[in-house]
Image (cartoon, rainbow, N blue to C red; front, side):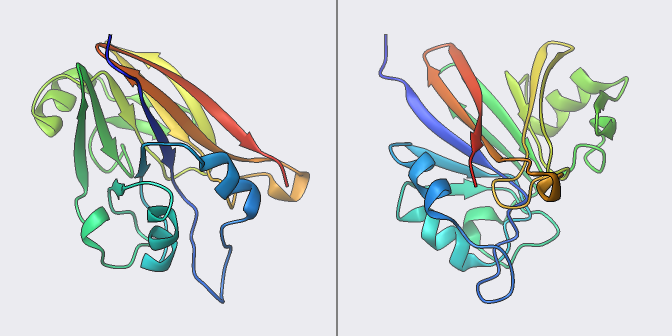
Length: 182
């Protein structure tokens, strides 16, 4: 059995130094020890990605609130980690994969559209655009949204920030939605 790869999945953080949220020590501590950081869009300016890159390599997809950066330039990305294929998009409705995202409701052509968009079947769809963490099992695929570590929906009511921690080994993966205290 191969050594597991630990992946942190983040989205919707909107990091704009001097004019928006920033990484807190609690968030950075929670990311310690990961092997890869995947961002799903709306991360903000490159300075936020640069800070994450001090922890682990960073790559992802582009959202609506992202500066130009080669690490997050594509609209769609496939990550192949062992036998696990992760499809990454910012907005699955815009990508033609879902009718709604909060809650996630797959399009009736979900499986064929995933194969077309990602060049084959995927183990899990990672998406963003809601600031709300979600997980579910839909036609042949796990669907995961990390929420937001910095701007969770309900923050005014004390909602914790969130991200997803994936542990991928061989042909399996486990996930945890990690809550970050304030």
